[in-house]
Image 1 (cartoon, helix red, strand yellow):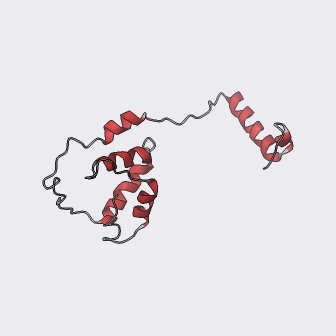
Image 2 (cartoon, helix red, strand yellow):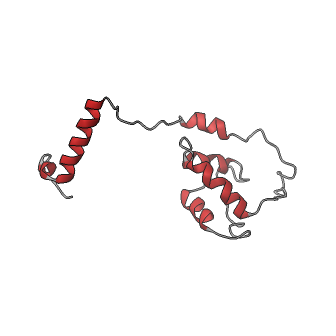
Image 3 (tube, one colour):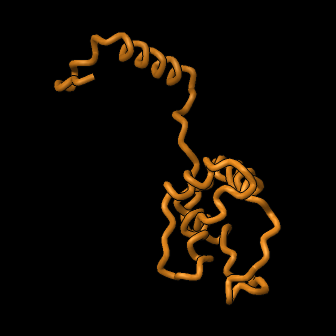
Length: 126
């Protein structure tokens, strides 16, 4: 909107409509919504799989029975849950990689999620 003065937008119709809406909500006793967030450490404990030991994990020969499409379908609804943060999910995923200093980025997850087909994404670190 490119307004420089703090009161420059008060003549805008959107400003007036928003003001009326918030005044109406205040008079009706409706509180401002606040997004409930779980602290990062609580979510980390929820996602912690460090106690799980798989056969063949040491030499990276763990058999995988799910296709990439099945994994896509499991990740997508999980990330839509209200208290799940993508960054925390990626940090926990990175802990399961053989390289302890490895990091996963949200772009890698997005690339993995956009691939279609049972074998697409099999080379992804996600």
